Length: 601
Image 1: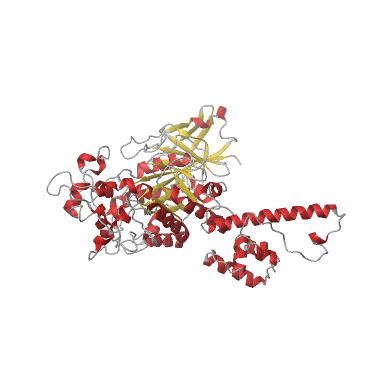
Image 2: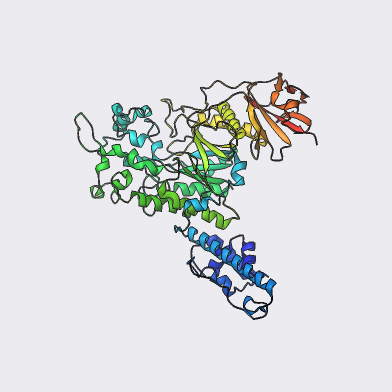
């Protein structure tokens, strides 16, 4: 039988503050956690002491707290005055108890969404979780209403209001302005709100998509929460422009999250909305010339203008945001609901730092994770260094092996939102060959790859992307031992130097790496070194110079060398200038094969 609140917490796998809130019938406990804790309480016949109940009754940190008095014998209040040892022991017990109470109250306060602990305080408790270190590869759906237009680039919602002559450096949006008029109508009437309503995602099957992603080797999955367009793909109590009310009439994030959990995958949601006001400012413009010169675009419409239209009851000012006073307040509420109601394993921000309105949402994400686990298992990613986060490189990689884990996010197609060729095929940024090179390079430098699959607005995946991903998935199936659960070696590789930073990745257009380019990974015990050899080394004699005897980087004698996925015997010799390997005349893979170098047992 459980004797203390600590026993109940240990058995139920929660913190003592949670048990105390259940005992006191307090709110702010997840229903599943409450039921699990109550079952343990009922099963063990535990009866709470006044001390256990008091854990949640004192809210103020300034109020002194003393355990309830007990019988004189053995109690702190009934000690013999000369019992110095026991006096000291009780002093320590009381102060340890006080510290525990404060910690529990702080954690409980953060989990309620209050600001007693700010982001910096809760981030100080964070360490990169093991699941992310082991995952190495995730797949992402970077989609939403901007997937509907077949032209105009990935910033369609902005560029559709901008005359081509005004685009300046944003030349990828050249087609949007004229395309929108030809497809939807003039921007004064048919604006971006009509694009939102045109997105139906009618063929999207979350379970089938997650199944496909697992087949391709993904160890975590991601979906978009919102883009700069200010349209939420999740239900919001304060923001009417969301997928449950406009467009698909479905909770797209909720469906995706449920499917990921059913297949035991960690899942992430991406947030890009912080720059909306500036980004959508062109929606308040008008034509500079022509028959409709000076007629305001639909960013100038108000809620009352919607009477009798499909968007009646919705406020365009809330969507276009520039002059909408509650924007930042609602941002905070929307994203607090995102973390509270959906409980993602990762929250991705398309910003260098966590946007200020979302800091409470991040604090709650971490506090809830801490409450439900022995450590924080959630992750926040940003694109600049920030304590408590994972650094994300957009379409780029780290210069070398970083001390901390990091992530690359990129897309298989040329644009984040699918903008197909005239024949319907994808404009590809990557193929299977370049993805192998990219993934291995990232993993060798302590990184993780999050790859976007650019799907159609109806939720289906183009066949040309499927074909490349099938090849990559087959390669991962045969060589995953050298990727998943691996760790970087002392050095990341030989040859194929890459420049680090954002927007600096190699792709289809890059010169393929040959067999003189290698990357290294190793198992967690550092007893197996994996040498990823690119190009076509079939039948060639290669020398892995980093394994030269005098360098002594791979301590211990080499016991065996083999090729993953091959039963062929590999002839090798460890010499002063490196590991000499005669590659087999038939290799299992194209573009990248892996030597498994095992230490002498």
